[in-house]
Image 1 (cartoon, rainbow, N blue to C red):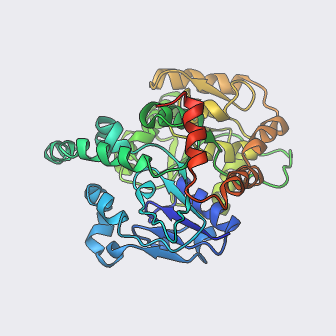
Image 2 (tube, rainbow, N blue to C red; image 1 turned 120 degrees about the horizontal axis):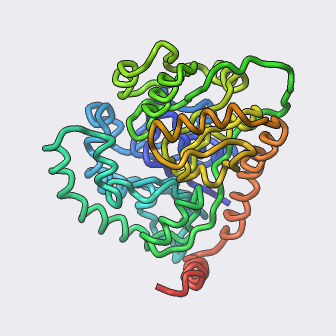
Length: 383
């Protein structure tokens, strides 16, 4: 069975790229096609991968300002030439699922799309642009492209034989926007092989995140500053200067740190603060794997991973006051590190490999895949 992988672009270390890294571990001989790649920013799991970029790899100004050219990628992704294979797996939050898959010798490879989220700037434009740019002129120009992107996105849905969603909330979005059924397979999370309950320092809260506005790190900074609680922030991003300006003396910004350093802070923290609404959110599960609880906004992927009072607590409103109340609550509760870790094991890499392999093996060898499409239509009751 020959498999080809496709991802939007490989120029950052995010949760979606971790998923691609795990797919590469499962299928090490599979080529990975993408719009462009920055090998200096790959996860270690992808360092030995054969990555085939588009012609945009030769255009540095596009790669250096890639978010400005979102309108161009639907055209470029169609230029990627996929070799003859049995299964094409697209890891997509925007463009990868639009890959052109040719029919050769009367047979067409199966297209399995692992969907991290439907294209945000097509279906949630206002929220996306609010987080990405303060340039009103650029936002107005970009808005004129929304109808085109929506049409393109819906057209590419027809070429997907099987959808997989990374969380329940994304499954619901796929059903609402695309009118398609998606099986949920949670992203793989690295959970420590062993857990020691030896005494550890627990005098600080932790944030591990890219520092961008939609992550709502400002809520954590303001809440800990007002409560005079120690907060350690690990990560970099365009929102760093704004966050530093609002921070009190109890907030410490460490910038980027190695995996080993991050794991030590996870192990020693009082709790992780996860204040934004994410499609899934791998970091909270990683912290749970170290036996530590999470303080999370009640929404998005956290609804799949946090059991209130067992491995974390929720706050219900995206406000400083609501988060402050949750921080005070987490300090009042008794936490069982073993029970917290057992919940994290539901999302470990072995579970992902088993669930994902079942889907791939079930469709391998099917040409045209009409049965898979019919099955999904029947689940939805037709459309």
